[in-house]
Image 1 (tube, one colour):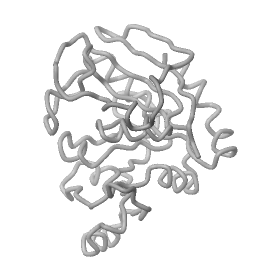
Image 2 (tube, one colour):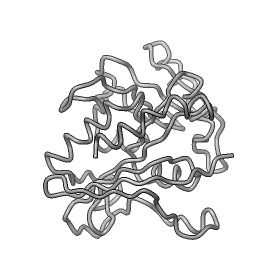
Image 3 (cartoon, helix red, strand yellow):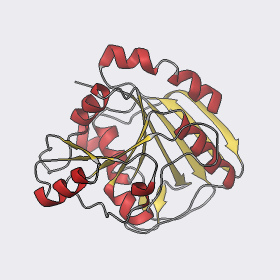
Image 4 (cartoon, helix red, strand yellow):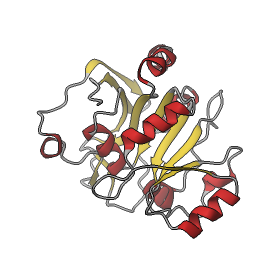
Length: 237
């Protein structure tokens, strides 16, 4: 599986030159019933040891890795490559109101994170981050006040990011899918039934389209888990 994903990402530079945006890989771990947590704001470990190593290999293939601020608050991940060879990607946090805690593990990485926010962010907090060396990306907001993800992809493309791995959480996952901003998905499916927070909220009412079908689907075992990879047709303006 990792060789197949690597072969797809070999074309990321051409994609970047053609679109001005990074090639986007959406990846997350879920239970058999589609849950990523028992409830919102609660951490749930799903991946086996083997699929966790695969996730680190996947990180090493990408220029940058993106999560929402909720993932930082709840899970406090480092988002680095530790269980595989290769360089750690640039961490990007989507945080429209600058809620990210300064005690978060990402601030102890060799490279400081980039924080994507909006004009609604607290100016004092913004100044503190800038003075500490953190790069902040001030972007337009959507009607609900969240960061405009299409604008964020354009900004990342301008910064030379050719491939982006999106790891969650559920609102980020849904927003990228609804916006047609995903090029491929790589999903870890754990043999568990949780009955909790779904990875993806309803897509049909949001975009008026029917179900989204993946192309070129490949499924293979990874320890006790299953890995699924597939392509999505982009829906970009």
